[in-house]
Image (cartoon, rainbow, N blue to C red; front, side, top):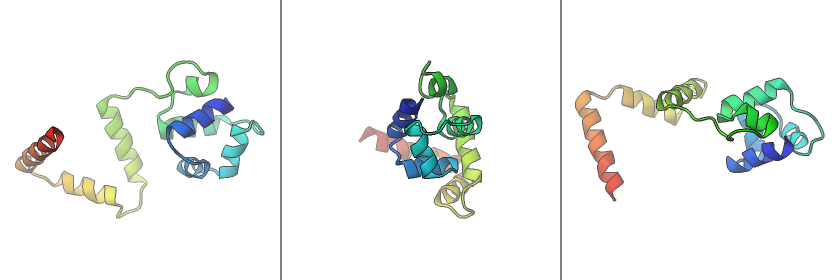
Length: 120
């Protein structure tokens, strides 16, 4: 399991501190899991899987794919859920609020801009 935890962290391009911060535990805990000095409890497995969309079977046993496949709707719901716990006036919240206030014609204009950007 320790190899998979480190592999996951490297795949996400996170330091031990950044990884620990995302799931709300100490960096020392991550280090001790990666060196097999202590065992991860069920709660930590759940935190990691939920935060990073990791396949728990892969993390525990090495079976299946590293990440769970999500539908577009699930990805959006996950993003919005995480957004709810961010600081009140975060950039992400301000952008989503601005998007929520667009009219249908604004959305069409925005789509045409994105399509032009995609062509370049």
